[in-house]
Image (tube, rainbow, N blue to C red; front, side):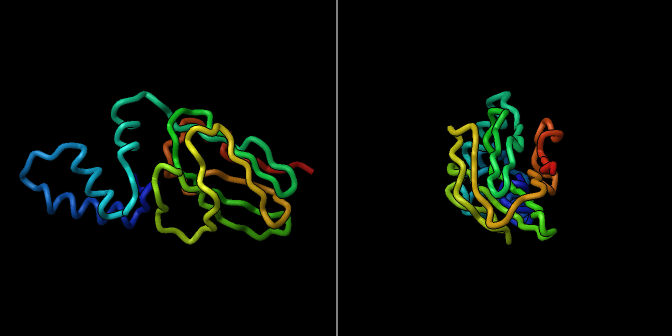
Amino acid sequence: MGYIIGQENLAKTLKKYFTDFAFKHPTPTNFIRTAEKISDLQLQWYLNEWTQTTNKIDYAVSEVKDKKITLKRIGNLPMPIDLKVIYIDGSTENFYIPLRMLLGNKPNSATIINDWSWTSPTYTFITTKPVKNVEIDPSQLMADVDRTNNTSEVKK
């Protein structure tokens, strides 16, 4: 949850949830609604995916060519993507690819690019400089089942 709404929003959500539902009989929906109020994001899909399916999170760096990066969703559980790009000149840039069904973005300082529709298995975008390395989820907070395909170094 912290990966999706941000660590600060998760801490606020847990505190508010405890305050509102201590000594009561809350449901998972109560928790999701609290998180939605704190984060201002749509999270019903998240509750459904985690509690009513066996879908897995698995994303991969599919291809890197000069300034063009293509990512692939292998698993069936959609997620927003944090991405770290290291350029050939040694500089770095962080990108955030929102998930369309969130209807918003978590707080972050990354460059926000177009959202990724959950129906599309691939996502391609162009950077401003030639790319050396790409890493999906550099924080390793996303529950990706196969991290071996989350990075790709361009070979010269």
